[in-house]
Image (cartoon, rainbow, N blue to C red; front, side, top):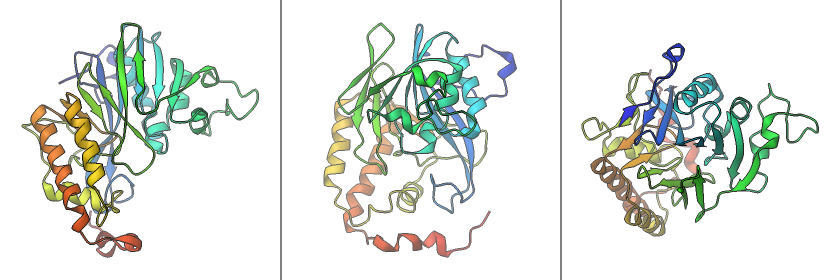
Length: 312
């Protein structure tokens, strides 16, 4: 795994794209501070995590998965420019449509690049994306203009294969067995990468400089850290839940796909078969024990992290 190509010395300040396989798939990671105010992590987590966007590249074409936070707009556009030619046809595929980290920069990206289509879970998915206040809405406002209005809207549902370029490369759309809001997972057979939206997001770093990719030599997560990340945040509902079907669906995906990289929507990328196997086991272990844990239920707003003073 290497950093991406540097085609423009003027953008050296940008976090370098992370090459996830022979310049065919890049992780565009932009860090944000964990200070108790972001919904991606428990309130008591401190450090930095990357908001991740993934770019699949072919000759003359590319597909972008998610679109990042608005605060990262400039950096993200610069990262995309490093990884593909400006005249390439770009297809957008926000897999976290219901979260701002998946859709915030759809409109500025569409205005900056040659975007031909946008995939979504609904026929009118594009209406979810056109909300940036500095752009006159091109979809809901007649005559609003803008290049997003010209993009073809396509459905991306579990079982579909999304073509990238004209040489037969396809990205498989998978159901997300574990999630908070409506999302899908994606599998890229060419780079053996599984994109997992809001699951496998539990690795962060103490410093803004990362690194944002974890290998066997740099895997800092403990079982306790991973469990706290899940149960003291968006997966608070797991204790007491029936998880047999979730475990079976996740096992089916891992059994039927050759996975060397787990690429979450936020948090560090997990690279290498041993790392993938370890983190799959960590997740399965939590899911296996969840039914016997005490349910939080309506007390979700009174998690222990809320009762304790937040320390910097």
